[in-house]
Length: 571
Image 1: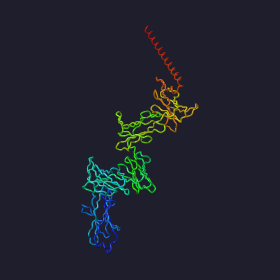
Image 2: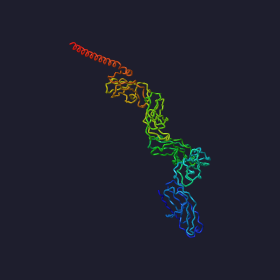
Image 3: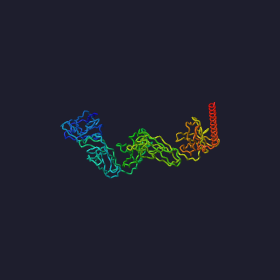
Image 4: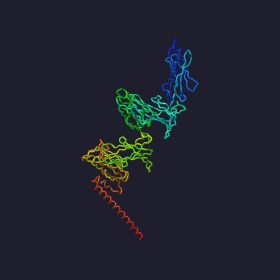
């Protein structure tokens, strides 16, 4: 982009005869750069030159060039001229001065030299650290370390956007990085100690690197350490809004929030009698994930750092799978192993219970399936809480950037209520192929509902319990298809609606058979419904008589055929 240069002249009141300044020596003009003489590449800057009332013909010079700029626009308000650069570029950096002439002797008087520094020209990252810490006590001296992997010749330390130190020579350390050390202090609580550093090459001291991270020394006083939290929570789905709150003492005038590793901080001034501030992120992205701290300022100084708030962003990667290695219906007091797995190359898996992080495990790669997985043992299982889990995966390089949540897994606690229900099949546990069966679950204890499960919970159905004339409570589960020679085993449980995840002890298992199968009804059915035992024995007796009759008929027919064959041969 080509910068636009505009020259402004501010001309004061009209000169009158007899002004003593016209006959005396010329006073030196003053040069100034607004907003600062350290400007980020692409930003605007105005160079002002201020002289006496009788000043005429302002000129601006840049060292190393023969050309100068003359004012072209006149504003009759003040006694200074300005040069406006709309977009500072690397070639605008340099050493500037200005001059003016008066109306009589036409002699010229120049100002002092002022440097215009352009930052962001070199993209090599610079880091600023406090040794040993940023929290200090009043009167201390602190060493600041500015370093980079780029071979800069010099480093500059800047305090509150004003040049604070002479350029420190860089030296190459054994770690292959270039650094300079600066000592500041003694620090006092009545001012802020906020620093940034830059790197540059000695061949052009006005072209600086991108700025380092901002570093602020906290001069501790008696201010209460602020508390920090996120609403609605610190684990947020990608794209959702979140607000970070910081709350301290009543004397607080300003809060500062920063994220570890970020070069930016957020500031909030607070109104009188308000001791907290909020920082809202309308739509979180993975760039917002990280560890946050806040601290506060008052006229007495700064507070300590708050505790760390870890803001996690989920939904960045594909969701893993979570399953129970055993049956998810768990007996009271036992422990369960759950497995989190994914085809994504995650370094870590996190298991959450009721949306709270409880376990973190390094992945184990399965040699048989090629999946990345980790197992977690939970328990012993109790009835006083829900056991609802999800798991996430993430990489070591971004520990606060997680995958989408797995589908939830809820462990169901059985054995809490000791009254065992009874499960039976209507009209019979032996069905014709392709037919349907009705299951009946009944108990003398009052349950709000009953639930029937099939093998490995691949089938489950719940029904509200009804009171029947026998003084018992029952549920009917009609039209359950029987598609194979053997279906089940089925089990039923009783539960109450106030705690639907807490169940009774299981009924005896029930197996459904298809007629024509050589398999007998299992003894478990006889245990589940002992009243059906005589019916079952009669049913088998009829079947055996039919088979014996059919065998006798076949033998009779074969005998007749043999007799006829012998008679024909004799003839």
